[in-house]
Amino acid sequence: MREVVRLAEPALPTTVVTTHLASCAAELSGAPLPIPDMADVASHLVGSQRDIARALEGLATRLARGPVTEDRAALVEVLRAAAAASTHAAEALEAGGHLFESVANETTF
Image (cartoon, rainbow, N blue to C red):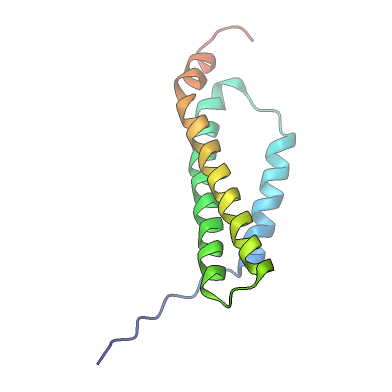
């Protein structure tokens, strides 16, 4: 007999989480960023981009399991492209990590 594995319910509905994410991103985009904090902020952005990539890939995977229609297949492709773009953004930010550190240590701005 197979054991049924039940996933834990999320702490918050996804609409609440994504609304919070959007408001945080909007706040960050308009906030004056102190140069010394750039390395820490970039590190958080790297992790966030990776999480967004996983969320988008998860959505694509779930949609791909359903009935195949032309629109559904196109949406799966869009979600996978967005996931790849988020992964690339994380990798680019991560590759520039030493530059964030270097600039944050400058004494004049």
